Image (cartoon, rainbow, N blue to C red; front, side, top):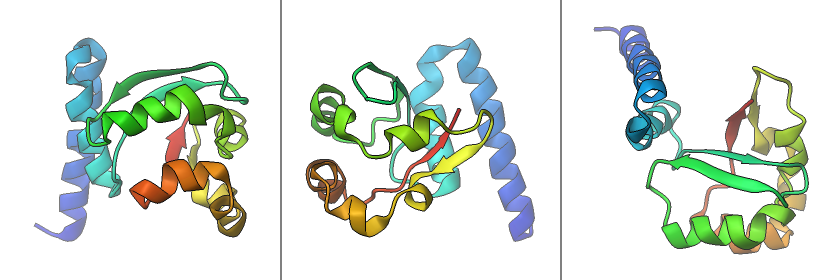
Length: 129
């Protein structure tokens, strides 16, 4: 099997898993893990928030993040997340890679980076409306 065939098979597996989870919500952690693996991420979640981060909700998570970090984000750090505008104002049906929307030097100087991103090393997110 060629590399392209492996990628296509993985993509088809991810798409099929998404359809399964839409019918059976208990499958979302595994589905998010499949999607995370496909894009090479460190974790995956489905969440909602407004531009200020004051209204936020975690819907599904893959379980790879320490639950304490997840609680910290949604309890305290979502309102100061510098990626809020890029995420909320992203065009519908278009992926958003936060590291391409935020200046890495500016981001690294934020309280958010110190308390959320630095302890986990990765500060890149891929989001889709």
